[in-house]
Amino acid sequence: MNAKNASAKKSASQAVVTFVDTPNKRSFEFPIIKGTIGPDVIDVRKLYAETGYFTYDPGYTSTGSCESQITYIDGDEGILLYRGYPIEDLAEHSTFMDVCYLLLYGELPTQEQHAKFEHDITYHTMLNEQINYFFRGFRRDSHPMAIMCGVVGALSAFYHDSTDITNPRHRMVASYRLIAKMPTIAAMAYKYSQGQPFIYPRNDLGFSENFLHMMFATPCETYDINPVLSQAMRRIFILHADHEQNASTSTVRLAGSSGANPYACIAAGIASLWGPAHGGANEAVLNMLGEIGSTNRIKEYVDKAKDPKDAFRLMGFGHRVYKSYDPRAKVLQAECHKVLKELGITDEPLLDLAMELEQIALSEPYFIEKKLYPNVDFYSGIILRAMGVPTSMFTALFALARTVGWVAQWNEMIEDPTQKIGRPRQLFTGEPERKYVPLDRRK
Image 1 (tube, rainbow, N blue to C red):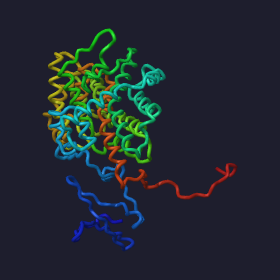
Image 2 (cartoon, helix red, strand yellow; image 1 turned 120 degrees about the vertical axis):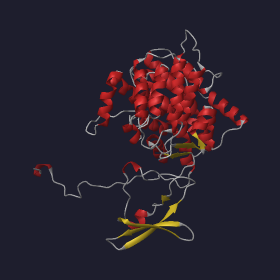
Image 3 (cartoon, rainbow, N blue to C red; image 1 turned 60 degrees about the vertical axis):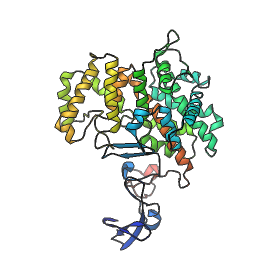
């Protein structure tokens, strides 16, 4: 196929693109589908049947794998919309429950809908008591994400009444349970690693406040919830709730396309999110700061980052999608400084190092020219560190927040009549068919 001979044209009914197969003197037309905003897409569903060709797109960076109405990103302009609402407005004015309802149902809730939804989520936060024993099978030093993968995957063994994906009520109940129980599971993973008793959820607390309570309270004393910290946690949750067809969301959709139960699909998403190139990036930021160690060594590491021959990379700067400032980072930048001020942190070496690195990234021409702005992982890592959340829990909090996005995307996929089981194709470059040689004749 000769891509240079591709040309777009419009008919009276629809736009099409013509691909010319020059060697075989053939041409084919494929329709162009328009979205409400964003790039149009070429519908290649019949490409193989009509031409005998597949497309080749490692990482699917130029491939639309689904139709969705949930989240829209314009990386060049630094725009992130949930159901059409700018992320900055939602982070400033909404509760996390508002955003959850919006992602699931497409509209912000009325007061009555909000009250019922919050009630229903709150009263699903408890775990089946037998699940507590499940934690004991893990080593104390297990990574929280390993624990969450196992426990979430096991939920289908405890909640048989919500695994029929063809039943809309089952899907709703499973969605609510996952959103509600993920903070409990994450907090229990932390408590288990610390050798502390589990703290049960409280129905009189909001979503973010309840999570902080389960993380930091003990049977010996209550945890006084600081409103500045709970607001920061609320915004972190909102900003991480969904992010279009990223690796973990695509994983959830791909697993779900086979008809797997929702708990297995979300466990698969957690496993994908764990990677340092995805959800593990905020944990990698703190590890990087630890490696640099001192503000005296910043120049050395900035020079290493500039050197194309050096494998070192500054974590928390730049983004695969955003080619301007990550809109989530703008929100958390202000939140970060509020948290540090509230906690009176002025002499924490790693945080001092992070703040100086931030100023260099915002002012030095190298970073500006390459658009390596501090991203959401940079600021969320600093905030969580300041709040006393251990580095190993950073990605677990990301999974907690992203669960609602995964669930919304999974539901949308199940209800899409055009959805098929995922089956990517390949460009095979191995050996062609060969004749088998018996063992005694091989040389």
